Length: 141
Image (cartoon, rainbow, N blue to C red; front, side):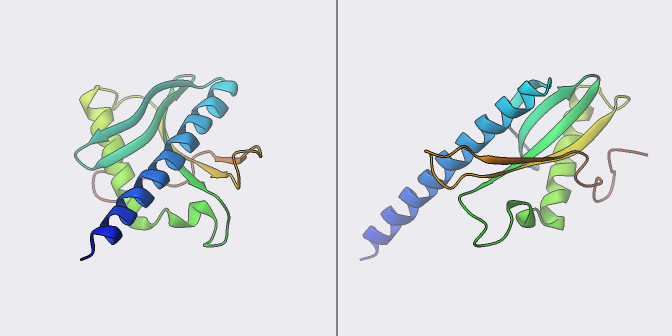
C-alpha cells in the first residue's frame, strides 16, 4: 500500500547523501588548498561519523561539513545542535585515544557550504575552532 512512499523516501535519502558527499569532497579540496592534509573522510565509529579528519600543521582537526542548497530552512551551521556537538566530541576523543594522540593539539572546525545548483560555484565558509568540546571526558583537560 505504501510501497511508492517507501521508494520515494529511499530515493530522497540517496539524493541527499550524494549531495552531502559532494559537499564533503568540495570541503576537502577547499581545505587542501589552504594547506591542510586530509587524513580521513567519513570516519565511522561507535559515536557516529566524523566527516573529515585533517592535519593543519601539527594540529589534528575534526571537521563537520554541512551542505545545503539554500538558507531557506536556516544557515547550515544551525543544524549543529548541542547533541550533535557532543557526538562529534565523543567521536573525536575516540580517534585521539585509538591513535594515542591525546598529547597532541586538536580542534573542532565546521565547513558550511551553500550550493544552489551544480552550475554555480559553492559558497564556502570555514569556522576554525567552531565549538568547544562538549560533554564528559572532553578532549582537553
